[in-house]
Amino acid sequence: MKRIVTAAAALGAAAFGLSACDVQKTQNGSLPTVNVSGGQLPEYNVTGPDVKVGTKTETVKVPTVEVKTGSEKRKESH
Image 1 (cartoon, rainbow, N blue to C red):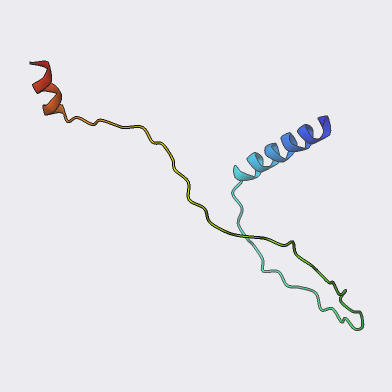
Image 2 (image 1 turned 180 degrees about the vertical axis):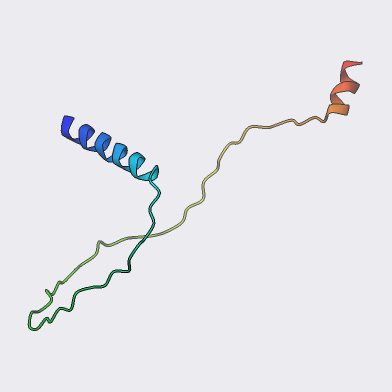
């Protein structure tokens, strides 16, 4: 737990420090040329859970609210 707190504090301090920096790009970059051949992506069979969706009627009690304007309040006080 102490490591997590320390890591979070370090990340927060780094983010704060970087946000105070003024960064300007001085040179464009480029990706290296890479030749890739062979390989295969893995295959997965995924079965999701059975989900049942429905509706039901519920009765909800709500409080009664009385709203009075300023002129209505003044009439009552006189």
